Length: 137
Image (cartoon, rainbow, N blue to C red):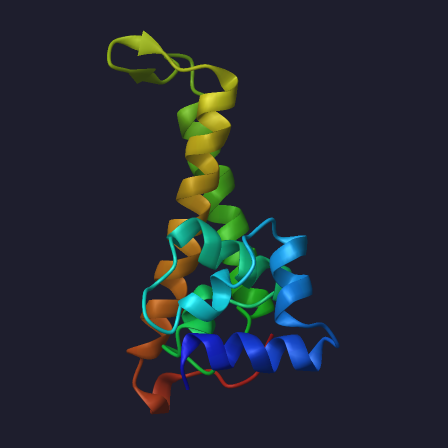
């Protein structure tokens, strides 16, 4: 199924139209329909995924799993806490020889969390079926 069709189905399931979704996400009129011919930016794709509480891989048809499992979410949260603790160590974090502001560190952590989630979803695709856990706990 194409990206646009997946978004249409999700919109229908949430009793909303594509036009109202675009308005709510501050996209221009007709933006989503244009994605039949050109892929959206990662930022816009993530906005749609967040709106429907699904993964970007689900939107792109890379997986049938709409959400990460509870265990996955806990693993990601634990990993992000470890990373945050390391980044906020006594030496601080530097970028181009200058200390990073608190806002810059938070932005970096947000990006890293996205990467960890995407990696988790992608890795799930390659686990042999006999080792996959099919429940959400």
